[in-house]
Structures are given as C-alpha cells and as structure tokens.
Image (cartoon, rainbow, N blue to C red; front, side, top):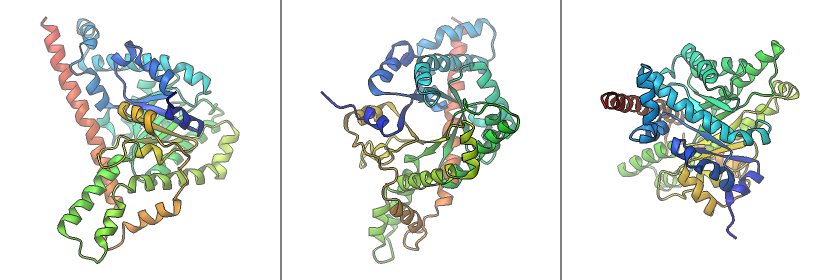
Length: 381
C-alpha cells in the first residue's frame, strides 16, 4: 500500500491547507475527496486564485446573469460569486473545524488588495466580509503592511478570525503576533471570550529565494571579485527562505513563553500559528517539496498549491525539522551582510512586500475587467 506522506505530517503537529479555490472543485466533490484522501484541513484564496477560477469559466455565468437582472453593480456581482464559493467551502470544511475544536477547517478570503495601505478601509471591509459570509470558520486575510497591522489588532479585538498575509521579514512576523496579542488583550479588558478566535501568520518562502537567487546570479555574472566569494554565493542559493522561516519559528517560541501570552493562554487563547505560504518551488533545479520537508513542525500550517500537495503525498521526506540547523540558519542570514555577498535582506523584504501587493492588485483588476466584459456580453444575449 502506498504511503500518503501528508497524513504523516499531521502526526507531527502541522496542518496541510490548500492554496486554491474554485467552484468546480466544490461542485465536483473534489474538495471533499482531498479532505478524505489527502488530509486537507483548510483552504486559502487570493485575488490571483479567483481570477483563474472565474475568468473564462461558464460555471459562474448563471449567477452573473442573476446579478445583471438584479441590476447589481460590478463589485457586488464579483462579491456574490466569491462569497458563495467561500461559504460552500466553509460548509465542506466545517466537520474539520468541529473535530479540531476550531484549530483547522478554515477558508481564507482576502480584503480588496488595493486598500493594503489604508487601515480604516481594511477594518471596514474585514467587518463587512466577515458579516456577509456569515461562517464561523472563515478567516479574513489582511496584508501585513504597516497600515495592515493596526487593522489586525482591531478586528481581532472584535472577534474576527484573521490570516495575516504577505509576511516576509522576521520583524514583520513578530509585529503581527504582538498585534494579535493586543487584540486579544482588548477583548479580555472588555470581559469578552477569546477562546473562539483563530489567526495564522502567512510567512512567504519561495519568493524570497527567487529574489535573492536573482541577485546572486547577477553577481556571479559580473564576476565575483573577492577570493572564494563565488563559492560562498553558490552555497546560499535557495537557502535563505528556509533559514528565515526557522528564525521566525524561534521568535514564535519566545513570544509564547512571554508573560503576556501565558496570561492569555490561561484564558483559553489559541496561538497564532505560523503558516508557510508561497511553497510551490519556482526553480526546477530544487526539490519540488523543499518548502515542505524542511519546515515540518508542531503548531504550524503549510498551505500548498495542488501540484505540491500531490508531490508531497508521493515523495515528501517527513521528519520534524523546524528546529534543526538553527545556528546555521542564523549564520546564513548574518552572512548576507559580508562584503563578498553584500545582499541587504531588509531591502529584499521591502521589495517583496511591494511586489506581493502588486501581484494581488493586478489580478484583481484583471478579474474585474474580464468580469465586466462577461457582464456586457451576457447582458446583450
């Protein structure tokens, strides 16, 4: 009998979620099948995913026509399509939510990406999305920008589950966890329950390596001037994202040992788990499951694209590695400052955040355009 390595991962305290959602996945029964056969325990979505799901898919046409007949504006039609998919996925994952006591079984939906730098609009939209969808196992995704972090604190204080997305730097992750803590503390001050609130911090991986590898390749092409620098540059290729993630996990451990967290834990608070995102390997020279194998550990989530789910079920090498090679991880990150490497990690993280928002804004705009075209076409039929 073939071993499903995804089920082994669950035994080590990590939950596997899927980074994909479309109506045909729900209607065909494939989502239920993935839960049963692949141990899937949650779903994340984003504007890029919905663009692929809705654009050119006739499955949505009847609902689009209903929106046209009801004279709904374009944004309302879009939301009616997306909210229905989210609700139906929440219903399918509800048994996982119940069985896990609210640890898993969540479906994430992102607030409009073009408000990533507006705290008040983010708070307002998070409230509206949460109320409109009306499912206790929905998570609202909020980008971890400087304006997004205060929004996280506020909506957590209002009892809304949050998936903080687009986290690249360890400092951003730490800020995210403290925002979660402050939100919970506000609820405690008001005498409100904190035991039913969940949050994950989506820490991105492959995009970091893609960015840094590109910088390394450029340095190699120019000709490394320092003796041995070529070899040093080659040794860090494809290694920074995992090292960065392992350091983030060490920060997680420090925070949960703090007095402030322990006080919340005593009142029933759930930890904000690190969620490994952007885990599809982009470089064909690397293992297609490298961002799974190296980051398995307790109290974490890994959200995988469908191809990585199947690859991992087939050939993941499962072991608890989240706390292995920690000293090497710190040394590797520190080595980026060395003159013969000279890569500014803070600048890389800033670039990635700007680019990450852009990667959500453009598909959102493209989706709205293709939806508008479809509305115009169906309206004249």
